[in-house]
Length: 621
Image (cartoon, rainbow, N blue to C red; front, side):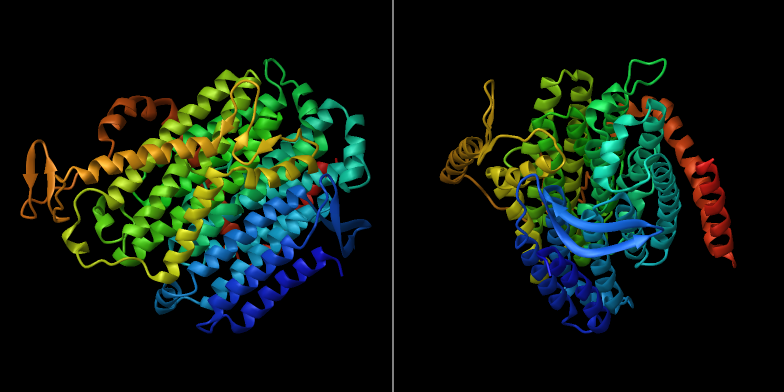
């Protein structure tokens, strides 16, 4: 039994054990220990740089062999997957699960669904050929559906909408597999990579559109992004943190395998779009820019904290793809590192929001405020998380975004650089709204008795916050894994240091940056607290317009936040952007409605068989 076999066996046993004992009150703690065991099994897999470690697991379907192995890229994504599951399970092990059980939900189903998601993702990440990739892809899609639908009600509708997208993406990928079998005769990565240079541009374009479109659905790239925010926001707390951290990044992993590893960025650069100056690589860059800007400014409008974070999850995926499109060592390192960074602060932010929801009963930003005096540690978690999400020092999000910015400048991509900066501006505006409307301002009367989140929820939140800071202070800890992932897919490998990167013309040393920042904050704190003029006021008291407002004067200025900004950009938004958005949403809504009727029909299997047969016949012809 190889080390990879042990990891797969441990993951499969986790699913089985949680199905058997998931109803017990100690199931969450048992699940956390099992995920910790999987992390240890993963650490025990020693992968030489540029090589892979095989599994003895092997199958054959229609004379096409399937096998599994782990390389540096697989290991990197698996670490994020298992880490996200570990912290999500930990968060769900105590008070949160007690409330979830009291609401009539099944703890067993939650734990087993989370474990099934992890097992499916590990199979996907370890795929050694496109057929095993497709098998893992489908398992992840259906496991994600189960997780999204756990809450019932509106969550079920959002999950069914996701299924409509997922089925369309799966058919596109299946079409690409069928064409590859026809043209190449094999689906093994090595065989496909050897044969692809012999295919014509029209054939490669077909593969790019089928695989790219299919995998873009899971990554929620425009125009296939409208399912994700609602689906993730409606998922139960720890499940939302897990899905938001890593689930959609399975789409990025698959895109890296097909577009970077098999086809190659050089070939994408050579695939010209007729009647334009763009190539396939330029098209990917444009899609990434749209993925950064449109969802980010959509997040700015949200009043539900869960939806705000879910929309940002789509936008942050654009940065990851943009870094890979840049193609050099800096860009691809930034894109890959951003996968890790985003997972840490996104999970922490979701947990902080659901901690507030756990205590107050609402995630409506217009119904919150002033909670910093009641939930100071949850406030600290959100503060660390939004700094990371906004890409500001000293948190880890700054490092990966800096690498992407620098790569775009070095590669002569000024328009994409401007798009990335505009996205960051929108992120800063919306995350300030998030923390302000939740924790700052005047405490509401109905929340006077609110207390801090339970310890079982606080510890994983604070642990993630510590990771966000430490990997921002010493990014070389993560860049070591990133370099191995780059080598696995033949990308230029970044020369890194513990503090960042050393470049001839302006590198990055976060050890120095954080040191200077801490020194500045220390001086500021000394001046503030040594003055002797500070005065603590009651959280119901406030100050505005030169006048003190006591608890007798209710004053809450978080409602309709950024009304002035929306007034300025409203005509533009209501014009071309809203027209395009509503058109896409209407078309997708029609398809989703048709798919819901399809799935709810008394004989869905017959229709599914007929549709699959027609699609395969069209592709083969």
